[in-house]
Every structure is written in structure tokens, then in C-alpha cells.
Image (cartoon, rainbow, N blue to C red):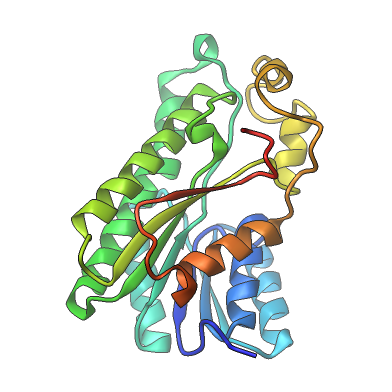
Length: 256
């Protein structure tokens, strides 16, 4: 059996649970060293312990807030100190919301942008600085189907559309190199955040939720976090070596 990421080191932000954890876990199974970031130490420790107990790739946890301007340099520095270099960046950290335009405050909008967009930009910039001298690297941004069908909150959907555009811009800048930049656009995935969304319990409530039945095929099954992880593995490994600047939608066809 091929170990697709043997000898590689991956940073996965927001990786203590959900899609981020599933990606870190699968990457470790495929031989990678994985550096997980999250804001809460206890949940991060539990995630790292679970991966290390499986005995494949090694896991390291770093408490970091992706909205912190100093986080990318600190995380990359610790990862390189521990494993020698970084080969893969997965920008997964982010926050959802259901706040409709008429209820969105300046402060709320700015906060979502800082985490979901500016934080992704900073991590991408840090990755490119490390990847360019080696002419090698993979960037995977976790976007959302809301980047093209914006049915959730105005701030969240705006950031995901911007992440898609930024992903393509970085890929264009790096075309002709061995550095690839792609995004994954998950549909409704079986996570705590999705459960809160479906129950109308995400910030902003249920005003925007009524549009799901109008614009989405809600009869198809939700995806699993592992489905998103398999897409990330494809893009991170040699299987996806000819793919860059793409937004891979993984949604069981719900958002077609």
C-alpha cells in the first residue's frame, strides 16, 4: 500500500475537531507529520493524543488563533523547528454565521472577515515565503459551497467567495512552479457547526435558513468530515499534481 504523504509535514489550522481534525488524522495515517492549531488547549491535546496513539505520522499541537496577525509566523516557526520544513498548509479555521444583511453590524462583519479571510491570507503569505525558495508546496483553503451559492450570513458568505478568488489569484501567481493552491468547498458536513446551523442556533438565528429549501437539495445525505479529508488528500498528494487554482465542491450534489 502506498503511503501518500510519507515524509511530509502539514499544518492544519482549526484542527481540534470536525473537518480539520479529519484532515489531520487522515494525513497522519498517510505518513505525514501534522501540526494542529486550535484556540483551546484541552480540545487540542485530545486531538493530538488520538492521532499519536494511532502510531502513524506524528502530531504536534499549537494553541493559536488564526485571527492573530502573529500566529502564522509562530506556527510555521514551531513546525519547522520540530520537523525541519513544512510541505502542506491547510487553512481550515473559520467561523460560520447566519446574520442577515439588515442585522449585521460593522463589528460583526469585521470579526468574521479577520478570521475567515484575513487569517487565511496571512497563512497563505507565510506558506509562500517558505515554499518559493524550495519551489515546492501545497496550499489547501477550506472554503464553502456558500462561496458560490451564498445562502448563509452575509459576512460568512462574503468571506468564502473571497477565499475562492484569493485561491485562484495565488495559483495564477505560482503557475509554472511546483507550488499548488486549491480550495475545497464543503457542503453540509456532519459537524457541530452544521448541527447548530440546521437547528437555527448559529449566530443570526434562522432568518436565512428558510432559503435552504428554496435553493438547495436538502433531501441528499450530509457529507462526513472524512469525505472532505479525502478531497484534501487528493490535492495534497501526487494524485493532484496537475491541479491548481481549483475549488473542489464536496457536497453529495446538494448545491448543484
